[in-house]
Length: 158
Image 1 (cartoon, one colour):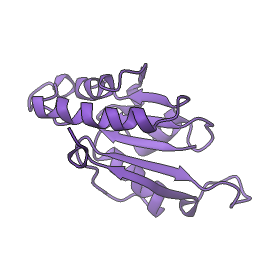
Image 2 (cartoon, helix red, strand yellow):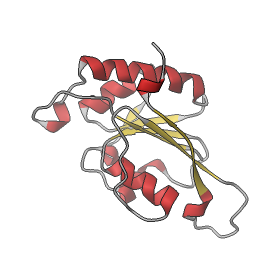
Image 3 (cartoon, rainbow, N blue to C red):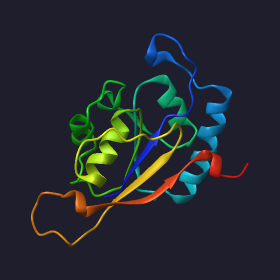
């Protein structure tokens, strides 16, 4: 199972936090990343988003159906996210549109083996993959995950 983490694009400041909208720059970031993702995501990829408006607007840029999950909201926990996306037992790739610090903590746990505060920048994508057939026990270990790609909107043309 591949897990693709997409942090929401740049949003306006304000309250309530869940109602913050993307800036003009944020919309451009989301569209650029969406174009790259659309060209690279398998058709079987499940797309899940935080219900916060800025995450929904980021996911909307992809132009594919997605599901909003409360377990991916701004107050999400790593354990709650892992359970909601059925990691590592799911078969299909999953794209998660979410927030810091939880996305960075999730990446750190899967790649580094412990929960640390790694930073995933706004609108960036981290693609985490599992090695298969290398571990006989049922518990997925950190060594079984690797970073397949990191992409930032400022590296993409347009």
